[in-house]
Amino acid sequence: MFSKLSAVVLAAFAFTTNAAVLNMYSDDNCEDWVGSRNVWDNTCAEGVPGFQSFVITSGGGGGQLVTTWSPDACAGPYTNCVSAGSVGQCFLATDYAGGSNAISSSYTCGSV
View 1 (cartoon, helix red, strand yellow):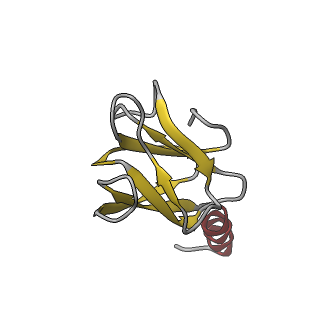
View 2 (view 1 turned 135 degrees about the vertical axis):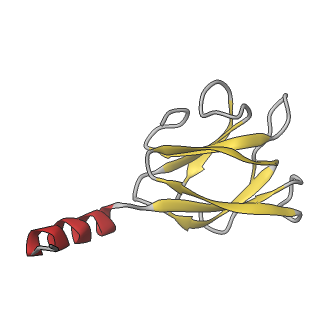
């Protein structure tokens, strides 16, 4: 049975769970769209399509940073780290090894 306490807990969870949303592009100037991905606060999104630039369309929680990663994991070298609040701007997501294929959202660059 759904109690009032359950409703309060669910409502609190709904207001504290956020996600940054990114549009990903295969070129370095945000023109050739390859997909879109939600990245929940303090998590890693692995196995995303390879991309070389991105635009944040929704910023997620306050103080979060979006980090893009060149390996297919949120570890090792990262290609960029920007404020999740930088909605609408085009950012590069490349390094000497090429583009990115993982994204994290956290309070510090290079961590989850």
